[in-house]
Image 1 (cartoon, rainbow, N blue to C red):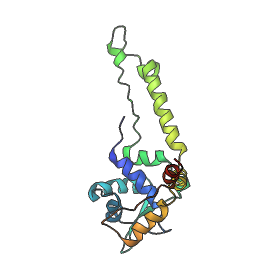
Image 2 (cartoon, rainbow, N blue to C red; image 1 turned 90 degrees about the vertical axis):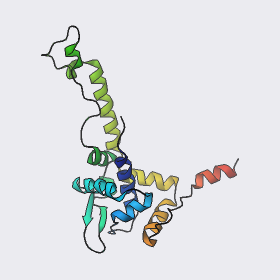
Image 3 (cartoon, rainbow, N blue to C red; image 1 turned 180 degrees about the horizontal axis):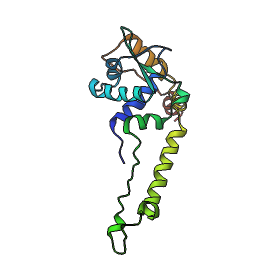
Image 4 (cartoon, one colour; image 1 turned 45 degrees about the horizontal axis):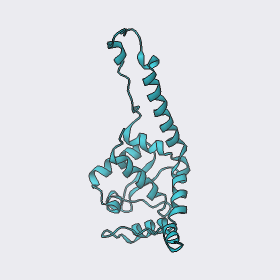
Length: 179
């Protein structure tokens, strides 16, 4: 299974919006420039997040997008579903009905061991995504890369379009010094 690029873009965009000043909205152009993404395609992802109630769209001169809910209330699954939809990763096509000894009257998606295994795997994946919120990811990033929130806010506040923020990983520096 491979998710679309839009999922990665949406996840990072939502995470970055947790660090902007409360109440500030960021335009599609600003968000797209942060990672050098195509505006039109990114805007489709942002609109999907608005439709799902994850982002809100603000009109006017200070308009753009901002989180509609607290980061603690947005799971990674919410974002994935907003972009990809609710379709399961595996869809049993009742292939066994066409094989030797198969019966068209049997729903093999309920009795096929492979179908059951795939459904359990999909459920485990969804449970994991549902158990992690934007707040969890934000906390983990802030612990691992403490400069990220300030660098992100600075980049958006200063309107830098020519370069991306430099995120310093202090843990890597410390481990190199200790070697």
